[in-house]
Length: 292
Image (cartoon, rainbow, N blue to C red):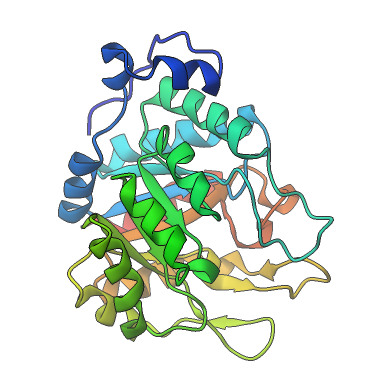
């Protein structure tokens, strides 16, 4: 992987970017989704970043480590963070900066580190806006059957990462993937993230990875959301990051192509999903056994 280089576009915010995107030297900054998708087919890939955009400095801190991981292990890495956590347990929970500010923050990460980007969208109108900056559009598990959302994401031409719902089997994911393909986009990633097991708990049936791979798309394991205990921490989601490395290794044994891990320098004080995130200083230790 080439060493990321800082761009010199001088763009101060997302609105500036939207009005100048057609300029050739700006377009050159943005990773071709086709090239990225092919890289993700050829090597183990990693989608890494903090759960939610808390502030710009957090994104820079984590992105620097993500870029270093790509260089150290010579694998495709993608930086992820959410501009809106639209399905938080409580209405009082922090959700994020919103789509316009969020795209500004991600654009600055791309300019500084040259990393491919992904974020999750929740409504069809958000697809085209986010696609101006990110390389992969993530469809949340709870929304993976939403036809209009899948079609809108597909029509951007970007890679579409569809997370498997907590109430679906691997075989059931044929139909969400089919919606993306029939909307004209074959760049699909399918992500396993566990199934509900009673209340406030998830289990992972790793046979789902085998079933998902039968469709011919890259399959990713969401190693951090799969250790969640949804709504199980008194008005917020709990979990146990202890099991993240084991989830990843089990997924590798079943043939996973990629690994999704949220990471944070101080997850115990993070504003979303802290109990599940890998501590940033431990990230390389978790990644290393998954290479090769």
